[in-house]
Amino acid sequence: MQLSPHFTLAELTASNKARALGLDNTPAPELLPRLILLAEMLERIRSTLNVPITVTSGYRSPQLNRAVGGVTSSDHTQGHAADILAPRYGTASDVATMLAPLVSVLGIGQLILEGIGGKQWVHVSTHAPEKSINRVLTITDRGAQPGIVRLS
Image (cartoon, rainbow, N blue to C red):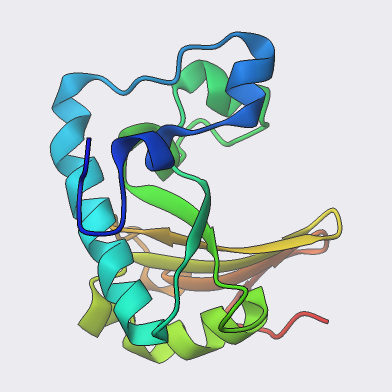
């Protein structure tokens, strides 16, 4: 099912971990409107970066979220969030640095540059956190910091 010009439901629910564990990662029908809003936000990000973006993790069923070690309050389980990369644009740090000043314009509720376990990605969500200090963050193995802190 095509959710937007460049993003499909299959792309936003694909998971190697779910496949490996035999988990069903099909979202409930009531989450479809949220996934459409997520795809529309991803379109705006794609247009801003002017390159394709890769979704490395989108919707996660509660079972899949537990299997990958996600927090119980994860926006991924509600159809609000995606982890992305844009290799043709640059590193995750490059992408997050570009998007940070544009979160309101692009309709990004939360932007997190993540660098954990030697991997880096950008988490974007349509859902804004209660505390505005948590809107733009960098999270590494050492913890969370407000704002975007370039990762090496």
